[in-house]
Amino acid sequence: MKLDKTAYSSIYEREDEHWWFLGRRRVLAALLANLDPPGDWRVLDVGCGTGGNFSFLDAYGRVEGCDYSEEAIRFCLLRGTHTVREASIYDLPYEDASFDLVTCLDVIEHLRFDLPAFRELNRVVKKGSYLLATLPSGPHLYNDFDCLAGHLRRYTREEIKMLLAESGFEPIRLTCYTTLVHPLIRYYMWRGSISSGRNGYTQGMQTVIPSSNRVLKWAQDLEARIVSRWDLHRGSSVVALAKKR
Image (tube, rainbow, N blue to C red; front, side):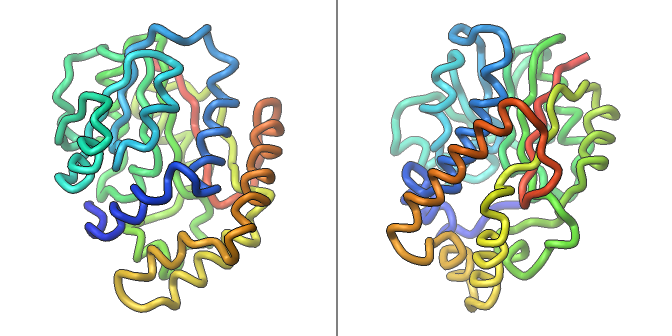
């Protein structure tokens, strides 16, 4: 499922400075820090969106991306930094066992069929190498904002464990995040859901006041330090780091 074109524009404008995108990268970095020394992996960002994660992933190796949306690819090309392809997650245009690290960040929840997507991700990962995936957590949190964002579902940790096992992955870490700012996340979701039409998604991404962005980034920095050592069981998002069996 593709996002509305205006959503890609909003993401492109915000993902280099918005606390949510920056906080997610810090959490991901905290999990990856415990793996083998990075720098020479072949990395694929599936559902790369507008390419905001490319520079972050550059620290781990040679990065390329793919996305189903022509509009997303257009924004990636504006960056002009990495190879990108238009592709379906169900039919990735790469050979078997091609990548040392595959990321799939807040993509699976947009898909009608999730298990086939995980199995295709498994196909392109080298044996013993890694998948890093983020998904929205808490089915009880599903609301109108999820609909505006194109989310078909939210997940429990147990459901993600099952999907990983059935697609040939062994979980290394499975932790929630956005735990410290969870009450504010709930507010943003409500704020976006009461906004009419396609502007609701953009409205939901805006901070209450400009200065709050700095405070929220600080909170996410603290959470990343916590996640580097312990799994969290509450939060509006969940990240899975898994190894191909």
